[in-house]
Length: 242
Ligand code: M5T
Ligand code: MG
Image (cartoon, rainbow, N blue to C red; front, side, top):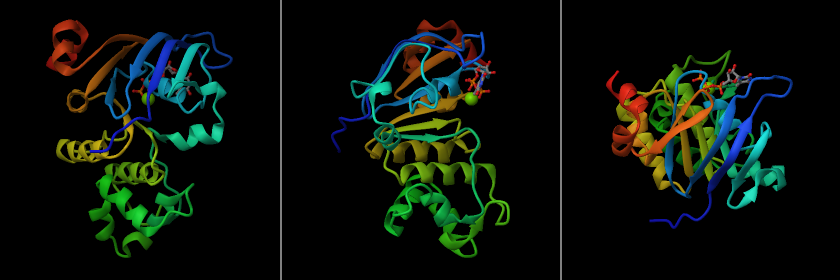
């Protein structure tokens, strides 16, 4: 077992509105995530889940409050270090026209085949790639072979893993995966040295996590593991039973 001591995240009284808009998208959000934890962010569409993620690698700055990684205010970190620490798999998997290999090593062009393969194995996409006509050299994207939504999601997870992030942000990146593949994926990620945050609208994904943050209307309604939330959160119980 690896000792995980990097990848701590702290939100303190964070509020956020998109520049030039009046609406508060996140309000007074505080939580702590420890290195190595897998935490699910659960909430309905429009709750602010993607917006919350965007504050971690500083795609946007907070309107109020502080976001810290490993004790450092993200606004004071070198952008280069921040982007190296945080792997963000966006809600829409974006592949460009090029080989599977190029798509995975995008942004880390010096990645070796060993690293690319390891990332793919952990992202649960290696077997699919081996069954493509030219394996890792197969062209994907607009002019390439057609991949399913779930296959694209896993390729984009492999792209994040190859950079060995300390913090991995999965924005609904497992929505197209069946429960078994998803459980395998989350298990493999646990073996990695990173903290994993996974946005989801599925209770089955939340149950797999060490802890759940329940977001509604830009507010953090409740947090805890599945069993404790069942006891303490009426909303969680309703989502679970629906
Ligand atoms: C929360 C607004 C959006 C909504 C609120 C990404 C984005 C969102 N919004 C913007 O104004 N600009 C943007 O670039 O923010 O939206 P969210 O954070 O995208 O919510 P979500 O991720 O929980 O929803 P979903 O549908 O992905 O599950 O008012 O208009
Ligand atoms: Mg979203």
